[in-house]
Image (cartoon, rainbow, N blue to C red):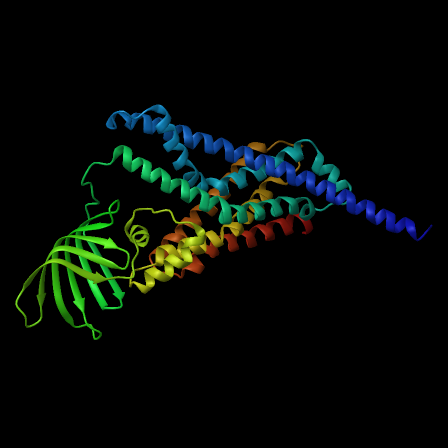
Length: 374
C-alpha cells in the first residue's frame, strides 16, 4: 500500500498538470482567435467601404458582389497581422490569468513560469503550422478569385501595366532576351516586343521585332514579326515562334505586383523561374519566410511573456501593455528590414527569414531566465 501511494500521487500530479495545461491552452487559443477575428472583421469592413466607394466606376455592380470581393481579398491581408494576433492574444491571456490570481495559485502549487507558458507555445506552434500549410493556400486561392472578379468589374479593355519589361530566358532553343514596352497579365501578352536570340556562346543570332507576343504553353507566339538575322536581309513573318520554359502562371508570378503564391507552389515556381533565367529571389525569400512563420509566432509568445508574467498588485498595467506592444512591433519591423535586405540580395534568403525570430526568442528566453531563476 505504501508503494502505491507515491505512484498514485505522481499520477494525480500528472493529471493536474495536463488539466491545467489544457486550461491554459484553451484560454490562450480563445484570446488569439478573438483578436484575429476582430482584426479580420475590421479589415473586411474597411475594404468593403473602399470597394463601395469605387463601385461608381463599375456600372451595374451590386452590394453583394462588392461584399463577395471584399471577402475574397481579406484573408490574404489578414495573414500579415497573425503575428500580432498571437502577441495580443498571449498578453491578454497572461494578464487575465494574473489579474484573477490564477498564476499565483499555479506558482503556489509549484508550477514554474515555463510550465504554464508551455501551452501557449504549443498553441502558437500549431497555429504557425496551420497558417503555413492550410491558411496560406486558402487565402491565396481566394485572392486569385478576388483578382479575377476585380478584373471583371473594374478592368478596361487594353489596360496594361505601363512599364518597360526585360526578360532573359533559357529554353531548348538556347538563350533569348526579351524587351517589351508593356505587359498585360490578364491575357499573358507583351506589347512592343523586341527579342534578341543568342547562340550557345552568347553571340547574337537574330533580332525579332513584333507589336505583340502571346505566351502559350511552351512558346511565345509573336504576331507580324520582323526578323533581322546576321548576314541576312530583314524578313517579315506573319507568326514567329520562340520556345520558352515559362508558363502563364510563372509570368504573372515574375511580373505581377505583389502576386500571392501558395506555400506548396513556391518550390516549383523557384526552380522553374531559375530554369528560365529569371530572378527568383523574391519567391525564395517568401518560401523561407513562410517556413520561419512558426518560429516568429513562438517569438511573439516569448516577447509577450516577458512583459505579461507579472503580478498586478501594484498597478503598472498600462506600462506593461505598452512595453509588450512596442517590443512586438520592433520585432515585426526587424523582420521587415531583414526581408528587405534579402530582397536586395545583401543577405541570403535563409538569413533574412530566420534571423529576427531566432534573436528575439533568444533574448526573450534570457529575460525570462533572469526573472524566473535569476
